[in-house]
Image 1: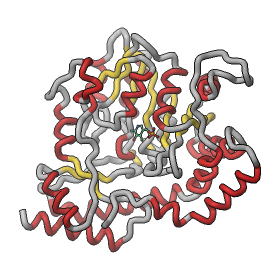
Image 2: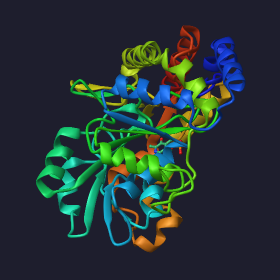
Image 3: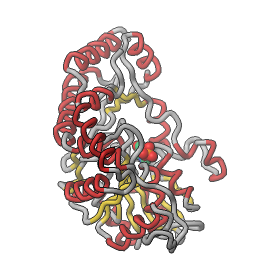
Image 4: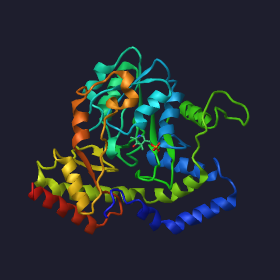
Length: 368
Ligand SMILES: *Cc1c(COP(=O)(O)O)cnc(C)c1O
């Protein structure tokens, strides 16, 4: 079986270095907010060019703590995309604010053209997602936010290493949130997350919030969270970070090969679009097909796993029933949820596996 995201290979390849780091951490005896987390934060700050990085327990918390630290709460609205992992809007709801959805563009990210008409007197922030690793239209989003006095918080959970006009995602707004879930481009052996920002006061507030609202032990200035990245995960991530550039490059190469070899299969399948100025991180390689479910079954019969991101857009989730959205509200997102199919990708997907995937797709297309 060819896996959709063959991540165990990544950890197996680096197993001895990871084990050595874990062993050192055991010997050092600091397990929470010690030297590994500090080092990871400073490396990622350096790597992205942000002034500050604050590591937390997971990507969802990165969003929640950032929204909270920005003072976003009950009565506030945050504009975001309905076509993303649930955690994006869940974080908005978790701080008591209301997610306001806007349809997506042909790059499958928040449609900047539609953002302005969703702004009300209660809007506090715009929360674009760099979906599948492709940067959202940050120039247009920033322009609207600046003109209307709104914050921009980036959900860069799927896009570590992506760039918009040369600038790393996460550094294009007030703050950027990353996830280190195992399948993300920079992943660990469990959960992890991180916030980057160049606003010192915001970084301090997030640091405080992740430790029960406390900057001095047993003195609490705010109601916070217990949301810290473990030293063990920071140690693993320091090993993985060494590989990120090479591995993101490999993902781009794999995407390019798909692009070249699957182009003749249009319109049975359509390929993802990108444009100059956006450096895609290809966390997910998604095609679309009007015969999506059939294609998925046929590939599975040929021992190829695929994924559906996402079968139900967020505005139609039961959890958001009370927001009053209905089918037809966001046609692009709704069509995509019926037609999108993710093909296997990863830095260690082999050439032979990719050949097998391409041949299987050709075979199915020919028999259509
Ligand atoms: C993975 C992901 C998150 C949440 O990250 P966790 O580390 O799983 O909490 C948030 N938003 C998007 C777009 C994601 O893909």
